[in-house]
Image (tube, rainbow, N blue to C red; front, side, top):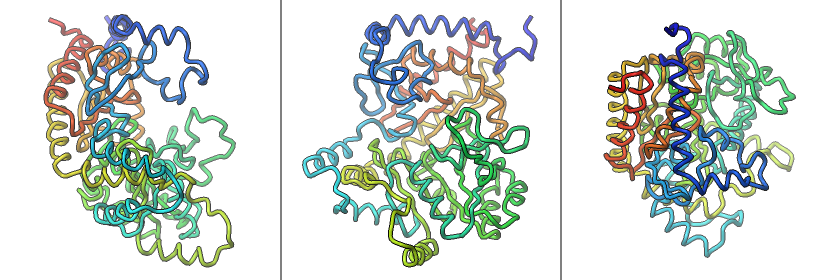
Amino acid sequence: MMSHESLIGGVEPRRIESVREREAARFTAARPKAQRLAAAGHHGYYAGFPLQWMLDWPMPFAMVVAKASGATLTDIDGNRLADFCLGDTGSMFGHSPPAVVRAITAQAGCGLTYMLPTEDTLAVGELLVERFGLPHWQIATTASDANRFALRLARAVTGRDKVVIMNGCYHGAVDETFVALKNGSPVNRPGLFGQVVDLTQHTRVVEFNDLGALEQALAPGDVACVITEPALTNCCMVLPEPGYHDGLRRLTRAAGTLLLIDETHTISTGPGGYTRRYGLDPDIFVLGKPVAGGIPASVWGFTDAIAAAWDRLRAAKDAGYSGIGTTLSANAMALAAMRATLTEVMTDAAYEHMERLAERLCTGLGAAIAAAGLPWHALRCGARVEFICAPGPLRNGTEAHGVHGTDLERAIHLGLVNRGCLIAPFHNMMLVCPATTESDVDRLVGAFGELARELAGRTH
């Protein structure tokens, strides 16, 4: 009999491996074209892929996409999947929203980038103020860029050099955020390549939901900015405890520290993100991935006080590159797509549909977990849903890191693909988009329930 300590998420490892082997064979049998391409090798790319993250899909070989539309993805072997990954939020409002396609088509014949504003550019500035509240905005190409630029500006306007992050956070490829807690002490995140600077010298890391630790980190008075997601989203979802955000804002203000809220994932919460829905009051707001309907673009906004300080800095500095901005940022194509997304795609009606079906999905997953008798839980943040193969709720990044059962999660992901459902490969994230249907949700719940029962040994 297996000991309790040997279980992974309450499941026997031999059963996980049995499920994984069977599902791998089923995946392979359904994709002869993709298998032949994989066998021939994807020449020209390091390790066969243009982006190393593509190696993280839990599949025997890459599933090659032929097309995607709305909430459906089709591979080159003709397999159709209900897509709940949606480009890991990049296509959060569905693949190729018609309004965005029209905007791209119209702009394509008029030039793609020329480092000057268009009428779309002017309209988007007004839309950002109206939707997200802050009065001053800049455009970047990715949320990583936006966060980097915002942190640079925060240090400049405060004259301070330290940044505080939350353990387990995700802010893209931003050096300052690659710090973690190990046995209670800050360390450079394991797995970094070519790291020659000790990031802990300028970054302090505290646990999410721990206001006492935050107060201690801010006490020296040298922190320029606290950068945080409203809820942790990339390590296993962790939601804020009651009063946490009020305390976060109170402590940062008392310390003279700027507060940056990164809504790149939590924009799932509503048309104005978690910030508008729950009345947060950041000094800086960042949003990337889905804001232009899948075209690379991001935005970052800030207060009048920061703008006034930036004006003074610009007036006093020598001419030269500021380190803020890249040539293709705010290109005409991105702004056309962003305007269409903000006006015709990210609507109240779309979010009402997304939230209703996300609740249906979360409830269904919870019922399937209970029926299988597994020690797991499901939760959501607006249209974003996760199942976590451990009891919950989780409180912080350390707890989230400790419950990842990689082999178990990979078996589930592969089993879902074989049953026509795609979820995010890096964690157990699912998004509901405006094109998602009740039948898509029910299909995912049914597939998940079948796998949960089998992994639990309750197939009869």
